[in-house]
Length: 362
Ligand code: GN1
Ligand code: MG
Image (cartoon, rainbow, N blue to C red):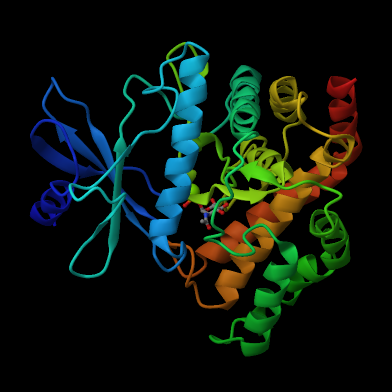
C-alpha cells in the first residue's frame, strides 16, 4: 500500500521528495493521508475521494477550486495570507485537479497548512465563538461568488429528498432490521411534517440559496496557535443551499456534550453556553448579509440538521450500512440514538436558543 500511495502521490505537482505517506484522521467518507516531504518543502494532504457519494468527482474538484480561488483573492485583498487562510488545490502533473488510478479511483491533493490545531470538540465557549466567526466569515467571503456550483450531491440537506430515500429503504427493508426498531422509526415519522414545512421555505425561495459549506463540524476548521480561526477546510460539500444548513450542522457538533456516537446517552445533551458563544461569533460576521427570515430560523436549523442526521444514520442502519463507515454492526443505531438524544435536548431548550439569537440580532 505504501509504495502504491507514494506512486499515486508522485502524480501530483508536489515540491520536494516524498518521504512518507501516512494515514490521517478518520473521515466517514474519504480516505485521507498526509504526504511528508523534506524540511524545505511543504507537506500535503492526499485523499481518495469517494466516488459513490460525490458524483462526478471532476465537477466536485471544480467546485472546490472555484471556492478556493475566490477566497484566496479576497484574503489577499484584505492583506491576509492566501496560502494559510485558504485551501490550495494541488493539480496533477497533467494539470487536472485529480488523478484517476488504474482501479478507477479518484485522488486529489491539497497543501497541508502547518502550525494549526483542529479540535474534535468545542471544549470552551471561546473556541465556539471563534468557530462561529470562522463559519460566518467563510459564508461572507463566498457570498459574492456568483458562478453557480455543480450539484454533485443532489438533495444533500433536502429533507424531502431524504424522505424519498427513507420511504424506499423502509419499503425494501433489505436486511430485515426494520422490525427491531419501531420506536426509532417513530422518532423520524413524528417530526416529518414539521421538517417538511421548514424545507418548503427553501423550495419556494422565502429562504435564499447561497454558497454554503455543508459540513461545518468543528474539525473542519483550522485554528492558529492563538485560538483564532485560520481556514475552513474539507470543501467537498460546497454547494448552493441555505446558510442555515451550516449554522445547524455546526450546532449539532459544537454543542454536543457527548460524542456523535456516544453509547452512554447520559453524556449527550445540548450545551446552551456553547450555542450562545457560537451564535454570537456567527452573527457578528453574518449579520451583514442575513435576511430576517434566515435569522428567524437560525435556532430551528440546529434541530433540522440534527433530525436529518438521526434519519440518515437510521436509514443507513436499515439499509445494511452502505453509506457510513461503521466499526460494529450496531454502530449506525448507536449513532442514531445519540443524535436523537441531542435532538430532544435541543427541543427542550428551544425557547432559550431563540432568545439567544434574538439578543445577538438586535
Ligand atoms: C460525513 O466524512 P465526514 O465526517 O466529513 C457526512 C456528513 C455527516 C457526517 C457525520 C458527504 O462527513 O454529512 O454529517 O459524516 N458527509 C457526507 O459525522 O455525507
Ligand atoms: Mg466531510
